[in-house]
Length: 180
Image (cartoon, rainbow, N blue to C red):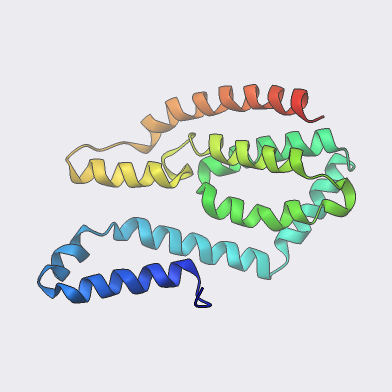
């Protein structure tokens, strides 16, 4: 509309609202989940660096080399790779990193639908594996800690990884039956 991105408009609106009531500015800033914000900022910087240095393109060519250009094997590799990786790196920046990797495979496979589904399922379900795997996990852990409840990383991981692996096994069947 104005040639601005949605995030820019949202930040402008939030700033304007804060300026309208300066008496609550300090309280509002105390309520912000700063740890979570800085965590994501660092992750997005890291992802940008991986893309700029060509590591993502290298990853795509290595994956195709490893799977010998076989769509079925590539789809399952993306499903499991993104699932396991997303358990330990937040799935939002991971998916942002993987999008150019999957897009670069269009000349080889044409239809990328199985790969997109594999990425979506793997990243989403992999995020259940650990506290740092999904944004929602971190937000809830931060809020729980403020309320006096500590969600421990290892305790969460014991249950989360089991659920993640069961979900990825079911997703493997789904991908194989539906797409390849």
